[in-house]
Length: 164
Image (tube, rainbow, N blue to C red; front, side):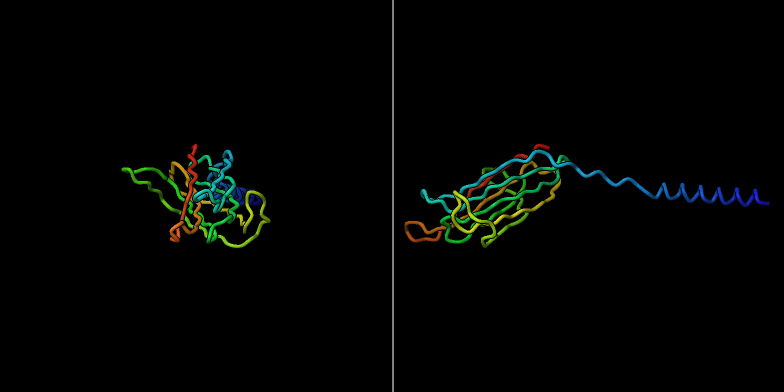
């Protein structure tokens, strides 16, 4: 009688092992991060440095994500510089268009300024996902007063092509 019980127990253990193996599925592979691209954006108005952003952007080789870190500093901008992060930037029918993912309005000194920065300096970083984007755009905004006294916002952009 011991033989049938052992066979049943062995058969049950084998069934449990097979069921467990089929329940453990391989996790989807995460795309690897590619080359890091350095970037610098300098906002000026009539020869006056308003703000600056220096840092990097990196794309995943799956073509659907990027992450970045930028140190933004206030130079002579009236208000603290702000940053727009967008994808798929370019001209459509003579008009510049993009898909904005986020606006960042960092303020406050968290990093000691180093030349060419001499005002408040902050580092921002993030990661965004967007399916099949062709490029990423960072737009830095600064402000000042024009010669006629009007408040003026000035921007400069960096557009980096998604290599994947």
